[in-house]
Length: 110
Length: 117
Image 1 (cartoon, chains in turn yellow, orange):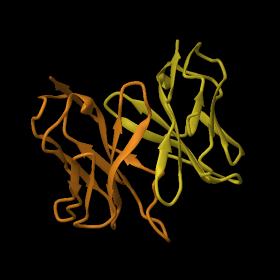
Image 2 (spheres, chains in turn yellow, red):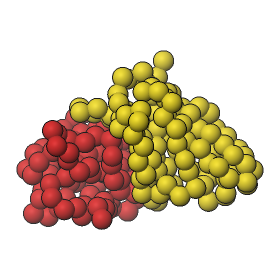
Image 3 (cartoon, chains in turn red, blue):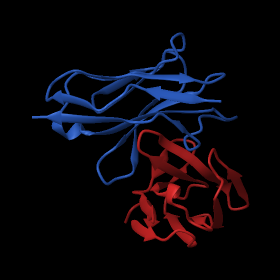
Image 4 (tube, one colour):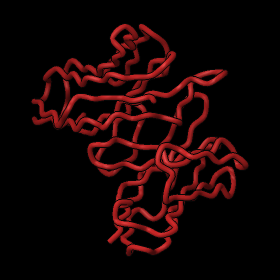
């Protein structure tokens, strides 16, 4: 099994719908992150959490919310999806020595 | 704020050619610098890192040297293989008390590398 698992792998949703992307990890890392990847822009940080009671906004948090349900679980929600949120979303974890990324969720908002 | 700029891609090379992907950064203080690689359909993997000026990171034949005077961290490989075809990202993080931060990263835009036999 993958160290960082993202579900779903692909999702097509309609404008205005609420959608949740889920991330779970078996690394035992306290720190978890959500990034968004757009062509030509690299990855940009949406939210991050250094432990279960700690949630922080990243560079592009508008239109998104997160929930850290447990040390191993960190979910990203789009309350009302819009087409410019079409992107590849990555969850990541880290400790003092390295970081581990999931395989990504490709989200299309139509 | 912090930023990372990579050379424009895509880069297309023949097998065994020399590779350079340029990366420059803007940041205050002394960030840590990273190269990540993304193979098709996969997440990012840490390729190499350098945490202070003049450090050289290396892995799988790839190298990059942290040059504070030119704020650069160029990726090089002497002889590329078809299996090196991927997207390469340069990134930085602000160091935290107690050590390097590996997760809160600022990325460059990525460079697509294609290696032909």
